[in-house]
Length: 70
Image (tube, rainbow, N blue to C red; front, side, top):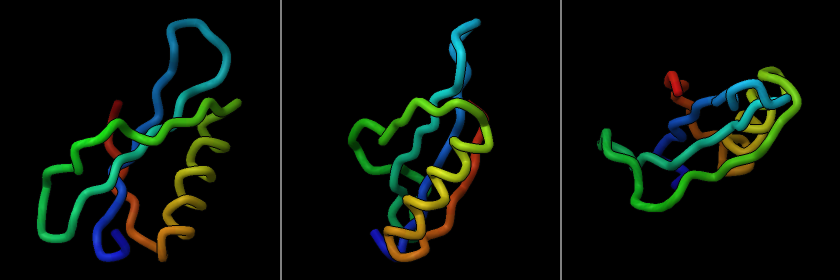
């Protein structure tokens, strides 16, 4: 996956506190994500959510993060 990228988004949950950050891998030279459920984490804020996704991207070899609207 080190040559691909992560497609990431942040979701709010209608009135519930915090947000859910999610990402999925996208192979190089493709616009189609891998077929598996996305990685997710409940976070207290958008800032915390972005930091988590960015740290996961670094752990995967510094892959690019493509942010999309949820």
